[in-house]
Structures are given as structure tokens and as C-alpha cells.
Image (tube, rainbow, N blue to C red; front, side, top):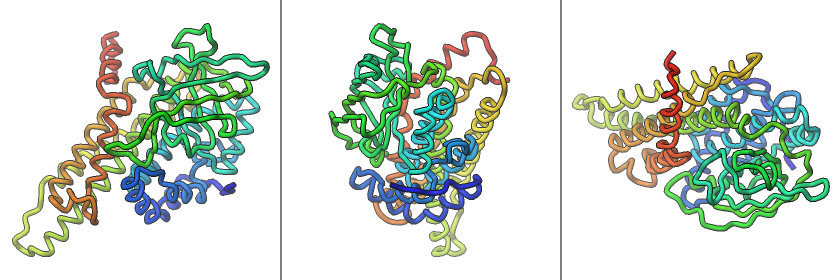
Length: 388
């Protein structure tokens, strides 16, 4: 059991991440090499109280808003992509849980426990047979007395085997339509997970996102009252794209810094004959744009959440950010590889960007970009001007 005090401010949270830089960086290499969970890095984040960043202060967490969470995701992503992605996905689950705790005492109690003990929360939204559509489920809740039985075949469950609890999408009941979904909190002791396939991927290997078969029996009080469609539109989709993009931007930033350092060493050796590489300027310009896009949408999300009445629909800009960040971050890492040459191509050494490039390619398949572009195109054809 871990008992840690959450950071009081966003500045304090960033300082705690900076203090863990060496631990996170060392864990990145091990997780990538072995496709193993970055336990050392996650444990360090737990001990620093950083797993409860998104838990409201009323439940014992830091209560950080989206802009602060995005800055933390960028900072962690610089040191370890897998740890950054795990942290980001975990914070997203907490953000989805928090509003539902107001009407569900069991959820409120769990958030207090999660903050006090630094629980790790995973997501089970994927499923065999739905074609990657987040808004559809085949699995359904089955009443069993005062409880509910849930069984689901998931195609990927990131860090599911290491998580303390799971947030699972399912149909409201056996008669419900595929898009009539709810979100269910499943505690580790309530779940039976069975791995149904390997996790040996190109990148983001430390996320340990193997396919899983889930069986669980949970009290009705652990089923969120709000329909999943509303949670997805209001929180899950925009915040996931913000935090994912932040992690990718952080990872690309580290690749850029390695390219800069390589060029500095090269310049010192060549003295007056050295010609500055203009690719560094291109990389910096791209990263400046990405950081501004992440921060801008994070601020819009926070404003929307704080506003009274109907929140702003951020689907189109969130989708656009995800597509842009997943593509442009790869271009930055590719340019870093060109600048560093064989030193960048190597899997070892201070100038290696091989892991960075492999990790960043994952962004294109975490909800396929073509699907997001198709959604945005359909929405744009309604005649609304989303550039205002």
C-alpha cells in the first residue's frame, strides 16, 4: 500500500517530475528492450503522489486542470514514452470517474482510496468485433441479484495486468443497442483477466497492451449513471487527444534535444569549419507549433469544463490535434535521426533516437487517423465553420 501526498500546485508537480528524470529515463530503455512494464518509473510517480493529479482535491487528489496535466504529460514523455502514455491514460480514467462520484457513493469512496493509495486505473474500451469503434459494445451488463455480471473480449488493455482497477465500457443491458453504453468501475479483486495474445510491438512496448478476456461481478453502484456517449464527448475524447498529443510532443522534444546536443559536439570538434544544420530550425518550429496546439486545446477544454450550461463541443479540434501531433512528432524524430546519423540509428548511446521514432509511430494507430479525418469531414459538411 502506498500513501503519498498529492502536489499542491502544478509547479510543484512539475518539480517532482524533474526530480525523477534519471529514474524515468533509465526505465525507458529497460521497458523498451524487454517489452516490460516500467515498474520503477510508475513506482516513483506513486511515491511522489503524481498518480492522483487528476483526482479532485475534495477526494484527496491534486485537482489539476487539463493545462497542468498536459504540461506534466509532455515532461514525463520526454523521459519515457511508455510511462508518459500510461500516466496520461490513467489520468484520463480518473477524469471520467470524478463527475460520476457525485451521485455514486461507491465511486466517491474509490476516488478517495485511489488518491490515498495511488491506485493505477486502466481502460477497457476496445473489443473484438467492433472494428475499433469506441462508441459501440458487444459486451453487456447482466443482472445477478444486486450485482452485475460483465464479460468482455478486449483487443488491447494497456497495463491491465498491473492496474488496481479498470474502467470498462459495455451495453447497459442485454437488450440495449450497441451504442447504448455505460462505463463500469471494476476493482482488481472483482476481475478475472486472461491474456489472449502477445504484446511484442514496434514501439510503446512498456505499455503492455496485450489483448485480454475480462470477467467480473460488480455492485450496481460501480456503474456510472451518465451514459458513456456523454462522457466520451465531454471528457474522454478531447482529454485523451490532448494528453496523448502532449506525450508525443514530449517524446519528440527529447529527440530534438539529442539532435541539438549531437550538433553541438560536432561543432566543437570541427571548430570554424562547422556549418549549422537548418533541420534543427525546422524541428524547433514544428515543436513550437505542437506545444502551442496542445496548450491551446487544453485551455479550451478547461474553459469548457468550467463554463455553466452546455459545454463546448471539442470533437473536431481534438481530432485535428491528435492527427497533427501523431504525424508531426514523427517528422521531428525522423529529422533528428537524419541529423544524428548512425549515432541516432543505434539502439544505444546518448544520441539514439530509435526508440523515440518507434514509439511515436504508435500515434497513427491509436484510433486510426483516417477514421478521425472521416469523422471531421462529416462534421464539417454540416456547414459549420470550425475555423472561427
